[in-house]
Amino acid sequence: MERGHTHTLFLTRLILLLLILVTVTTCNSHIHGPRANQGETLMAFRRSRNRAQVNTVNENLITESSFSEMKTDDNGRRMEDDYIQGGLPGQPSSKGSMFKQYAGYINVDRINGRSLFYYFVEALHEPSSKPLVLWLNGGPGCSSLGVGAMLEIGPFGVNPDGKTIYSRRFSWNKVANILFLESPAGVGFSYSNTTSDYDLSGDKRTTDDSYTFLVNWFKRFPHYKNNDFYIIGESYAGFYIPELADVITKKNMEGHSTSIINFKGIMRSCFPLSIE
Ligand SMILES: *[C@@H]1O[C@H](CO)[C@@H](O)[C@H](O)[C@H]1NC(C)=O
Image (tube, rainbow, N blue to C red; front, side, top):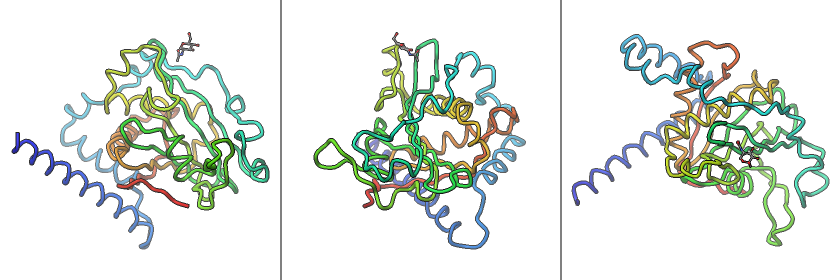
């Protein structure tokens, strides 16, 4: 019992240390010289591993066919359908027209009826030339809309009256397009029509669902396919982020041109960001 606990503690510390290293490396690469492209580095790493152990790696690949078996669809919706006309309720009026906001559902499993909710804010200026950031909160089970967007990095925070919102001075959409994803199903507005899905939730399915979400999200927002894509988040997302990055690089290497994601890198913070 005691030994098991010490062992777990050691493992937890090791993982934390590794994650800090990843974060520090990311920060350094922004400060020093030519920015290392994490996406490409990961791809190169994958390639070398693939050469070394072709069989084992391929077993884990999520193949194109297993995704079509999921019978995902995007309900034939276009981005305009998800546009938040007039901004959020109680939003300061001056900000309303300055950047566009979208929200909606992307189905990730049509058979079970599982669907993930997203809130997307475009960058304040020239969104087409800015990076696209997928933001994930941790938990597991923490809402990216309620916490990530509203308490941490989004363009608005909720006023004490609980009815109106204010503009956040250091909103990240001043420098990037931010896609807040509520994940896995059961978190925030994301849901499944099959109750047992909630019991069978886990990192592997969270990763697969997030990937399916992304592929379908890009179908709805095709003109974001060429923007530099990053995954950033905090806390338990330190598990989700590298796992999703791994799937993206594997899938990118399979080279189905329709689902290539212009993946550049990841960043993860250990502690909740509360910036004001
Ligand atoms: C879940 O069920 C509701 C009610 O039948 C339906 O409107 C909705 O489309 C279903 N969701 C999915 C993802 O299938």
